[in-house]
Amino acid sequence: MAKSKITPIGDRVLVKHIEEKEQVRGGIIIPDAAKEKPQEAEVIALGTGKKDESGKTQAFEVKVGDRVLISKYGGTEVKIDDEKFTLVREDDILGIIR
Image 1 (tube, rainbow, N blue to C red):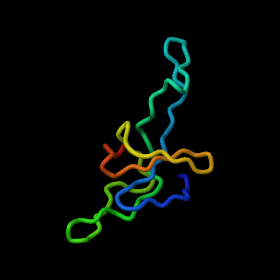
Image 2: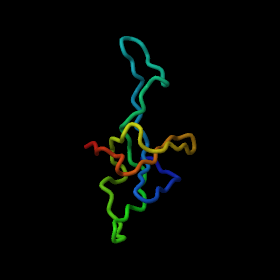
Image 3: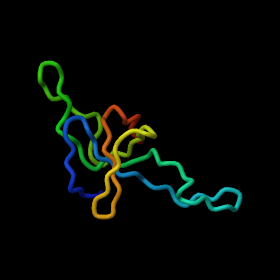
Image 4: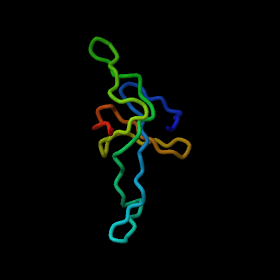
């Protein structure tokens, strides 16, 4: 599990995409530029939590280390020490992979 220098705030979750191995279709290697952004990711860090109307912090439904599916175009990509991460809102997480 990766350790990060970023601590998300609010209902944000820091994830690291799980890269697929090089795709080959019909003997043709698909270049990185043509590959779709992977939707499977590992949760690296959780934010401080979303607050409800009464000011109580709501618990996250995911935890550090979970493998999750995230929406294809959600989040903000960040690069730290040559590693790419994405900050997403918990609402952009579609499900947990078991």
